[in-house]
Amino acid sequence: MNAEDFYLHPYYAIDLQLFAAADEGRTEPPSERRRREEREKGNVPKSPEVASTLVLLGGTATLFFFGEKFIKNTAIFIKKFMAMGVGVERFGAEEFRVMMGMVARDFFNLLWPILAITVVFAIIGNVVQVGFMFTPRALAFRFDRIAPNFKRVLPNRQTMFNLLKSLAKVILIAFISYILISGDFLKVLLTGNMGVMESITLISYSGFKIMMTVGILLLAIAVTDFFFQKFEFEESLKQTPSEAKREMKDDGGDPVLKNRRMQLAREMMQGNMLKEVPKADVVITNPTHYSVALAYEFGRDTAPRVIAKGEDRLALEIRRIARENDVPVVESPQHARLLYAQVEVGQEIPGEFFDVVSKILMTLEKFKRKMSR
Image (cartoon, rainbow, N blue to C red; front, side):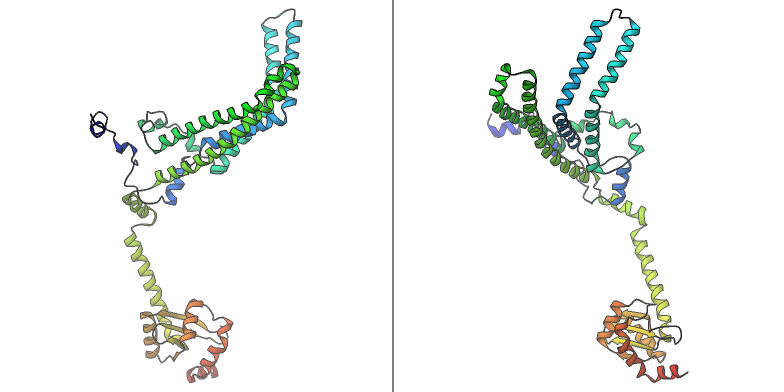
């Protein structure tokens, strides 16, 4: 059997679909609603490697800085209860209960600083990834958490990445440990000629170097794992086009009806605006594109107001209504463009237009008669 026949043989054939994405049709990016729903369920992108690595680094650093005190307290703890055990004449159930209570109390006093530091770093490791969040729904029982899921053991992107991650951790820990132990090997051999505290200090320092170096490398792996988990989470939230359309309908209604409602609203607004054109004192135009209708009520307005504006077809309609109602139409392309862009309907014109607009108004006989009245 040649190589080509080997790979084509049914027994040895590899189903490449096992490596394919679980949902080939999910091409639409996740919506904010979907992200919010998943967060409420407690589903957020995070890597357990980050928290465990920070606990390793924090616990190791704590033991290094408080190691001498910890060793002394441990020695006092052992000496105390060994002496107590030797001096006891009668050891019954009551004595055993009292001694176990004392052991538990002193043991907790011995370990609580390390336990507190590890808990703090475990919390920090999760907060830096997902922020502060509390989701009661995540505490509810879900059968799918304990039901067999064969997708987790089949070859896919997640399982292959986890395999590579585990191999990288084993290789890095072994390699770093070998390098550091080799450098301190001769010193460790000489511990037989040292005192107990010197030997403990040397071995503890070697262990500290190994743990911190390994911890820093594991932190790099943890950060990589976090970004991979975030990528996988984003992929899992993607939607099919039909799901995206259905969600859009649920949030804002049918897009066709929504666009129709917006169109009707624009038409209604334009209709109301066109009814104001006959009240204008002047319409300033760019002959081909823009029209802006201005009105000034003496005693009410501090400056002329824009009561209607439009471009293209709406601009032509404003000019038509203005001419039918004997409203002066003045061509001033530059000022028409600026007024259209800078002033909304119902607003007074800014000071930079006072001089130009007042000159235009004072040239109009209709406005002069209005002011004289």
